[in-house]
Figure 1 (spheres, one colour):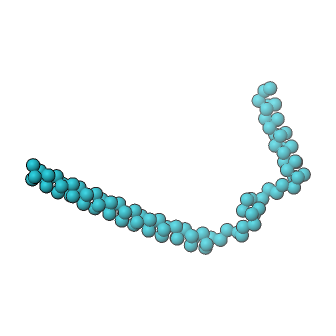
Figure 2 (cartoon, rainbow, N blue to C red; figure 1 turned 45 degrees about the horizontal axis):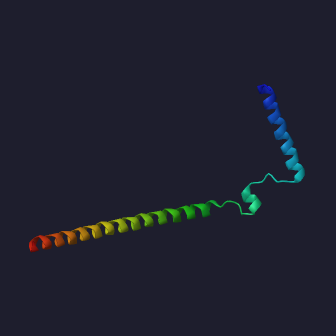
Figure 3 (cartoon, rainbow, N blue to C red; figure 1 turned 120 degrees about the vertical axis):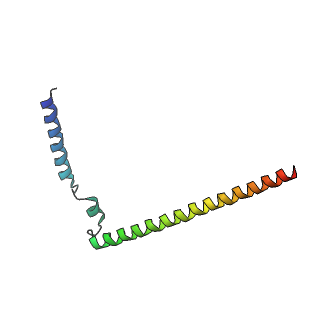
Length: 92
């Protein structure tokens, strides 16, 4: 089988599948149309994008709060460990 026969075979298969698809009545619509979704609303998309950006900013703030508190807690734990070591050294 040479390259020309291969290409011709692919063309025949595509043509045959398109005929079968047409005979079975399978629509060539998008999934959005098949689900019955309303058309895309640009204003709604812009509003939702704004909300996403607001939520991302809030998440950044929350992450900063959590990590800062974690660092402060770790410092407090280290300070307590150091205090305990000093007390043990004083006893010895």
